Length: 297
Ligand SMILES: Cc1cc2nc3c(=O)[nH]c(=O)nc-3n(C[C@H](O)[C@H](O)[C@H](O)COP(=O)(O)OP(=O)(O)OC[C@H]3O[C@@H](n4cnc5c(N)ncnc54)[C@H](O)[C@@H]3O)c2cc1C
Image (cartoon, rainbow, N blue to C red):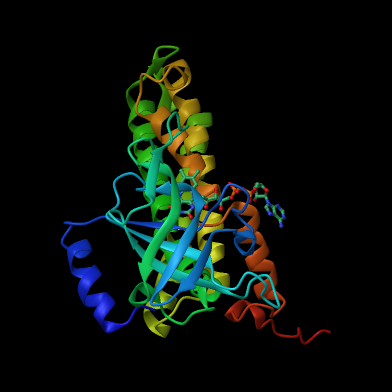
């Protein structure tokens, strides 16, 4: 939704890996309910003044720019109206990021609370049209759910590989663990689910490539299912590792912890189901909304 000037200024350094960006939507009281945000951006001459607190922001303490969703109309006719998106630079006075520690998983990823206190942003940093922020944000999540689905597939594949080789090497009852039928059944189910998850993620990505924009229902389905499969696979993979998996001495325990975020960020499992359900009923534009009437009806 950015204009050419914004794209030229901000995108090349990101693509080159010279700068880091963070996306600030969630607030302490508003996660799934994006329309519940309270951060304000009040117009003052040629500037907007931003005040508010954003929560759980990935790259929060290491970002050079923040994409910030804020209310530009404090009394909109509908609660999802009157929001806008801004580019805020880390050096602008009033920006403060506080690192959040002791996460269950994805500990290599930075997560922070980001506070904006009277941050003055030039009007040129408004992205797209004022008041369209909610719709822009929903579109953003439709796109980003596809890479998260592939994150789930990759994580599940890694866990499967660890479990497979562990089962082929570990000896129990004077035989290899993989020689027992129960283990083979576990590995077979894991591998089958993994391949099904991969195909659904490909389908969502293929649709986006083909149509030039994602299908929200299909994208939510891909993220929902791949994240479910990742939970199943890390669970079984840790089981195959026995006590060594639980004690954290094996890489699998990290996969187990990392998998949990897949059902929380970029839309929780429940929100994905809601998007799929609303798509089926035609309330969200999606190919899922076209269900043929069975000839026997
Ligand atoms: C490590 C990490 C990184 C993150 N990175 C970012 C980031 O970079 N930028 C950003 O803006 N946010 C980020 N988030 C925030 C993330 O998107 C939110 O945590 C998520 O959207 C859920 O919001 P919440 O935590 O407030 O939970 P809530 O919305 O309070 O939900 C709590 C529970 O209620 C369920 N629930 C909510 N509404 C309904 C409903 N209508 N029906 C049924 N169940 C419902 C939820 O599914 C969930 O299970 C990150 C979070 C984490 C943990």
